[in-house]
Image (cartoon, rainbow over all chains, first blue to last red; front, top):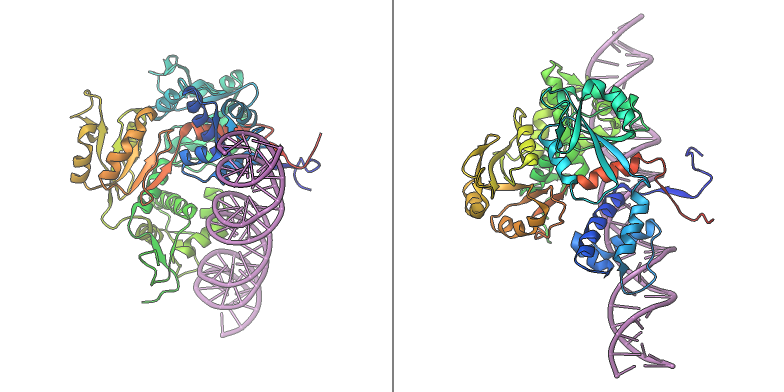
Length: 224
Length: 224
DNA sequence: TGCCTACCGTTAATTTTATCACAGCCCTAC
DNA sequence: GTAGGGCTGTGATAAAATTAACGGTAGGCA
């Protein structure tokens, strides 16, 4: 009764499923490049270190089903995943902070087939503003809202220094952005209707370090 | 019978809890810097956009408990989290591929109080090998195994090009590394006793893009 | 001092996510 | 043809994570 789509039987896909779909697709593109036309669920699974059931379940969730028992048609599946996770007309992405990380991200995109386009970068460094950095025009942060609106930017990659990250919330919200990938180590309070993915590299590394330890258990009912 | 600690009542902490603990700590350090001595669970919670119950539960899981009702002692909690997620003597980290991403990661570490030390970088570019890049000595990838052993490197940040990522598995395994943070878009098959965290930036961005869409629901039992 | 508020720690319930198990069917081989 | 094997799709089950509920108690205040 509370969802705005309560009258239809619609369901939100699990976040992990979305991540895996993205990974499946990239693997499938690789397979396609190698001339492969069909692939079994267990093959796709082992490539990702997961189980075949997981793959089939994910595909079931998006309503994909194979018309043959010779595995999934690679090309068809690629397109189908695209209908789920892509926006039909693509989606413009802006990036705030044009340092090493931003340049790395931008370069990652080169050569990748994707409906995502990084169309504008923002920085305050006068050496970068007005130039094209890593193939993306760089604007001054002061002009963020109007430029973002001009470019119809819907998602933001935030790579500014953590110390100024909080100041970005207001302009990002005002520019009508719908999703934020936050590389900053500052948790940000956006309105609920903006999707935020916090992705702090220190946290990740500390997590890896924790699970790299020999002793990563915690005593429970045990006493001295 | 399979765990080496089966005789004690020990439990593995949830992955999410580890991530949050890392985030709590960084926030607490920030609070400490601002002269704050105590903090309530609901304050810590709202800073991270989660609930107070979640915070209290996480702290319960690691066996932390406050001796007062005036909130948690910031400094004490910081140290306690450290006893859980840090290795007592710190942990040496190596980084493979010294491009933009690696330099960004390395810079992120500067000024952060952490038991993690990036002590060696590896690349194949002769312009980088033998020099100090972002404060870290850079060795040739050919010398990886012996150098990693010398430095007692336990965790690896993998930022090489995806196309050669698979070739890194063997030397990393051979060097006795226990954890890998894989920024590559290639899923890697390490032995089970090596902890791997796959973090592909394209996947993340596609996820953000998906949840940025207006329509991210999937029909279930609904028909035409 | 003694009530009252509000915060903490913990158990229980719920929700979400992943795994198991199996029915059905296409494909292959004979 | 047709019997058998192997792959898919999915209901049932289990595991993981989050959220709710509540008793206990320190601290504030009259």
